[in-house]
Image (tube, rainbow, N blue to C red):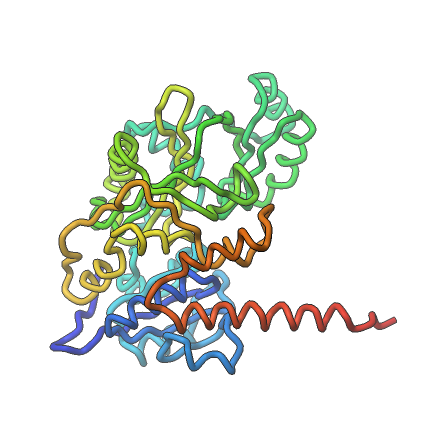
Length: 383
């Protein structure tokens, strides 16, 4: 990894790739508030033009992100001369692998070619993790309806998963044989692999950190107490973990990341089985959706990231304080769920503190988007 360290009191330049969701804007705000000059290269900017005065970005460029080398991005890198480049989505990470080597060297994370197949197919990563001593779910690869029948015979319910699943997409909790077949038919052919995992009735936990050479320097772990869709979806609320769960999650996360030689942001999903053992079910090679929980639990994630970019030293380790509940902004308040409006409004209390312009801008963006959607729906169809 080759970073161009900032000199003197100058803040570093950082390019974020694919700022398609709020956590990317939060990352930009946190770095900018510490003096970094943050730039966005993204398919589209989320905020309408009249709100962009509150944006934390010094400059931006909009271009679709596909599977090809980008001259526009190379020009931006040459103009900005960034200290580092951070992909904010998995698609952005994979796209950066198509860029010239001198650009890839500045990426955080900079994933070696030998490791990349494990990220492109989670089934391969889970198999590797089992070999590294990390417990994983009992699983059957699915390549045909006969494989589905074999998995069904082993017992229902089952979790049918695509080799690449993000935020509940590509995951189906199946209680009947027909549901297993339908999920397989939906995922097969669209992903590199499909598997049927045993369903464990215990709670789901998230563990995320800034890892340096596999060591979790600034680490958060918590139970997903509210998820949408229930059981398989995104975390809407978490409660930070205490012992012995915290140490068990830390040990498993570091075991995987040390073998991946991981430097950068990443998170894990674990399920606690009936015997009290954590089973590793998914890996997110980027900043995660509920990352704002680190702000309320004492994890110096963004301060450590800023110091690492500037000086190559992330500072003293920090760990999440146990027992703190956090409602994830903005999804708890704004996204569809089974909660009442009044209950959802309570999520505003956990919006990032000290980031008023970011929070107000996000709420205004949502209002703008809903108004525009209502106007479109009110127009009579042409015909």
